[in-house]
Amino acid sequence: MNQKRLYILLLCILSGYFVSLTGISVGWMIGAFLIGGIFSLWIPSWIHPAEGSQGVPKYWMFIGQWILGVELGQKMNTGVFHLFIENWLYVITILLVSILFSLLSGYFLWRFSQTDFLTSFIGTAPGGISVMPIFAEEIGANPALVSIIQIIRVLLVIGTVPLLAIYWTNSSDKLHTSVIASDALVEAHQLLWIGLVVVLSVGGSFLAKFLKFPTPWLLGSMIVVAIWQAIGGLYKESFTVIYWPHWLLVISQLLIGVSIGSRLTSRMFVGIKRTLLVGSLGSVGLIMVMALCATVMSKVTDISWITAILAFAPGGIAEMAATAVALDADSTFVVVVQVLRIGVVITVLPTVFKFLERRITKKEISMTK
Image (cartoon, rainbow, N blue to C red; front, side):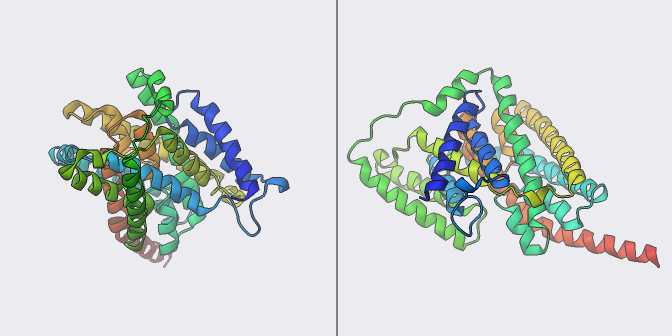
C-alpha cells in the first residue's frame, strides 16, 4: 500500500474509533467518511495519494463491501424469505410510497434549484451512492451532483436512524460493545472451509459484476455464502461455521466510509447552495415518511421497528447493511428489501424519467409558441 494512503487509513481508524465511542452503530464508517472528505477537499501536499489519482483506490470500497457480503451471507436463512412472503403487500406498498415521495422530492429540486431535470430526479431516487452516480452517467445526468445529493441523504440516514434506534431500544451500551466483542478461536479444520469460502465469494463477486448487479461485491459474496450455508448445512453443519471476526466488520466500515468521503470534490459545491438546501429538505422529508411507514409496519406485522426502518431507509444497500449488522437487526431482510427497491429504481424509473422529461419539454415548447 502507498505510504501516504496508509497515513489516511490510520487517521480514519483514529477518527472512527472516537466517533464509535458515542455509541453510534456505524461510528467507524462516519469517522472514516469525515477523514476521507477532509482529505478529498483539502489534501495537503505531504499526504497526497499516488501520482495521477484522486482520493482512495476503488478497490477499498470493493473490499469493504465484500467483507460485509460474507457476513450477511452467513445470516441468510429461509426464515427471512418466509417473513418477506408473509408481508409482501406491506413491503411493496411502502417501497412504492418511498419511490413516489422521491419523485415528488425530485420535482421540487428541479423546480426550485438550477439542477437539470434528469439530475434532480436521479439524485433524489433512493438507490444509494454505490449505484446512482454510475446510473446517472449512463443516461446523461450530472454524476457529480447526483453523488453529492445521494451522499447528503446517506449522511442524514446514517446520522439519524442509528440514533433513533438507540433511543427506541435504549440499548446504546449493547450497540457499542457489539463491535469489540471477542471471537472464539478458529478450529484447524475450519481453515480449509474459510479459504474455500473466500475463493468462492470473490468469484461470486466477479460473476455479479459481469452480470451487472448493483453493488456486485456485496451481493455476489452474500449470495455465494448463502448458497454455501444452505448446501453445507444439508451435509454437515460444521461446514457452515465460518470464522469471521468482528474486527473485519470494523475494517469494512472504515473502507466503505473513507471511499464515500473521498468522492467529495470542491466542484460539487460550486454554485449549488440551493440544490444542497432543497435536496437536504427532501431527504429529511423522505426519512420522516419512511420512519412513519416503518412504525406502522412494525405495529401490524412481526417485523421489529429497527429492521423495518433500516429496510426502508433511503440509504443504499451497503450503508444500511452495515448499520443492520451493527444494530443486530435482521440484516438479510434489510438487504432483500433494499435490493428490491434498487431493482425497481433501475428498471422502472428510467422510463418514467424519460416520459416526464418529454412531456414537460413538449409543454414548455407549446407555451413559448
